[in-house]
Length: 314
Ligand code: TXA
Ligand code: MG
Image (tube, protein in one colour):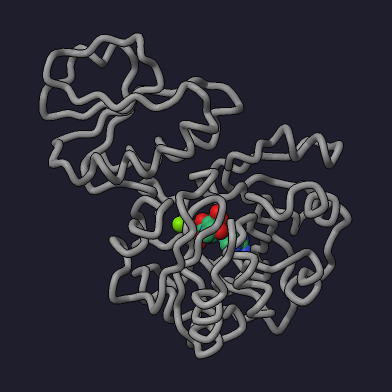
């Protein structure tokens, strides 16, 4: 991608002035603000309608910025950064004392990642500091994977949205907590547990329920406003013309009148398209979006997590 520097310079000027910028990353679009400016951080929470007890991830231009934000950084963090940054991995580390409680929701830890998107990296490099950026959606909504979706969520609440095309990964980063004795996955992502374990040479834990506030762990999250239901193959016969079906299998039969959207049977491609398709179907007036259950295998773990949260309402 050739980068037009004018929008990037405009974004940096807005960020330096404490404003908000819709920023493409390889996972989903973020709502970025200066992570060392408390007024700017407060604007993020207000724009998203996000409760203040849900911490934000700080995005950095490179691993060199890590020690400014985190302390007691374990060797595992550098190993993982070397292997996966820039990329869809967020590390939770003990925070430096100066880091704002508003950013970390009062926790002694901070989430950090280096995103793999040329536009995000260009902004981060030109800006020089850390950018707080949650997904650029209203609290509990589906994360945006296009610039148009950011505007749909936040028009009038964001100063500028940078165009960066459709996000490559399509689901939010894997979050790994390295602040305690055992590396623990707090949110699965398309960067798999296997890949992390292969680099660390140790098993990592996966946290089911949480004492730490992780918005993605609300029962309803990543959800369209149309009720979503996860169904098995046996449930297909019960669908009617008021339903849309998302399926990764072409070989299923459904009653006449059901709108069928086939996604890939490859998990990477499925993840890439899922949020865009949920968003499109959400606009079409269905009474229900039914989603065929995906395989119970590690490559589908992050997708399964998001589908369960999308269906949490119904
Ligand atoms: O892929 C991503 O991670 C995207 C892009 C924009 O980078 N960002 C994203 O941010 O998904 P958000 O705020 O929507 O989700 C970040 C998650 C939240 O569940 C938050 O609670 C958790 O990271 N988090 C942030 N700091 C944390 C901390 N110190 N301890 C535990 N969880 C933390
Ligand atoms: Mg989010």
